[in-house]
Length: 83
Image (cartoon, rainbow, N blue to C red; front, side, top):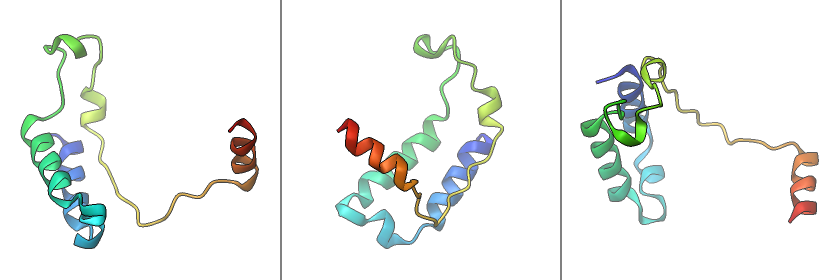
């Protein structure tokens, strides 16, 4: 298993069950994680991924954060204008 998938799985396992199960999606999320870990990252042998090298990405680690993303008020105002 790659560093990325190991860190993703560890971060997912560390999440509180209430967050994983939010909106009734717990089992779907758990199954998606199981399949992702079992299948691994696609390789260039997969026709759809043959021009995408994921080796560098697979060596990186994923760290979940408990912080809520914040958007600058001006960015939100601009999105409302585009709306």
